[in-house]
Image 1 (tube, rainbow, N blue to C red):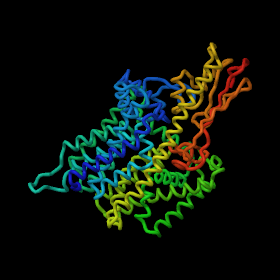
Image 2 (cartoon, rainbow, N blue to C red; image 1 turned 180 degrees about the vertical axis):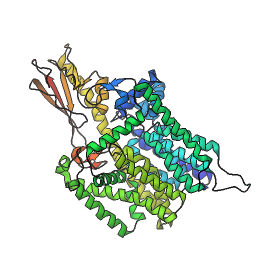
Image 3 (tube, rainbow, N blue to C red; image 1 turned 45 degrees about the vertical axis):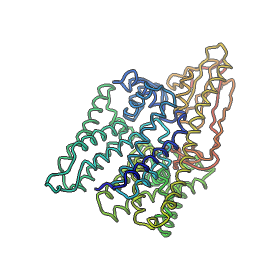
Image 4 (spheres, rainbow, N blue to C red; image 1 turned 90 degrees about the horizontal axis):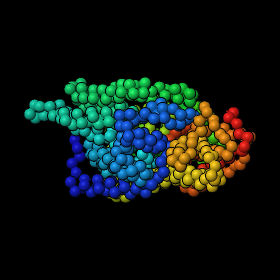
Length: 573
């Protein structure tokens, strides 16, 4: 595998452009409110800052009653350790943590560029096509583990490919493998797996690639013991600390959730295509340049059939979701499902066509990378979501660049032809990221408004402000003195307040006839696109909300019900 030799000045300009572009895309979200599972990562980082050898040694109420964090979280702690370092150095504000998490995003994009140089003549296109997607942009505006894991994955892959050396023996009769690079790669694979468990999938992927390159097992295979032993050590460590191994606990949770969802394999596959295509949007915007009219028409027809099948209920989505959730907008959902499913087909087709045409280790590697991630996200994970699809996006960017090499785009006018699909994908992706930030910020604003209203109404009384719902709303409500409802020990008293978000997770009707007053608080969502809105079929962070990673249309306002209990409240449910 040869590195594409570019002039140093051209390579420097390309990488500088990518850094600037990444910062331009992400800096506007530096004050984005903590959102979805950001809350868990921030609290874990704060725990680590005080107890570095006990990352999950605290309790929280995340579902229905307080419990140990070691049972609630399903992610390893390395990203939280990084957040703890940032928090100790610069504080725990949204600004400081988001700016710290810009670094993994920059590493991911520069790493994709460097990796693409080993596969294609157009590494800049590959990196830009990776950055300018909803999956990367939205995920990189969080303080969760996903972008960091993807960055470690890409850098570990670069080191491993270079560490394998040439195929066979050199001129001097010595094997050209580089043990130092293989060792560094092995430690980064372990780091990726301890950032997000899916990072361990890099082990079988690189084993397959190494066998294709070297034709046999050699000493390089021993290096994979490092990440394997790292995960085993983590499992034993957490079992000693918390009474259960957290890697196996996450696996059991995913298995139980899949069984409970009762979703057919066909439905899983179609939703998986929707998420893969929507999150890797550049595969769709490049399609008119890379596929024939007949191929595009065939994929469009398949997409329409899939869209109708899901939106009309012909293919059941299982226990978590039904077309009734978005029946008022079924036509729009159908159309968008058709587009996203078609994009997903193009994603898989890029990998399949490349490995069939080139029949080289690189093509096999990219094929297994894309298809393996696709299978995990749709059929092995507890739910489909953009965070699970994210790891395949750099591979899609590289595959797009490889396909460009053999098309008419290599002729005159190349820059303009490449710029159009990148600009379209980038604008749409930034719009989606902006809508996601708007939703996150609405929870922060509402928490502040609720605290002000309740403080004005309760005066000098000792009334408690209770709330349902979690995610970022919980973070801000608790920071302002609110208490999450404990369904095992309801303790509402006369004069207490209860705020309930309509669009949230873990919601239960605990109201009673002793409600003295009720107010509706609305936060308008004028963006015209949504990432988490069941009425539009959008479920970026979980397909339990909808079969689309995002949805265009009039976005309902985020509504919150603020109740105050009267003098006859009791503890009965």
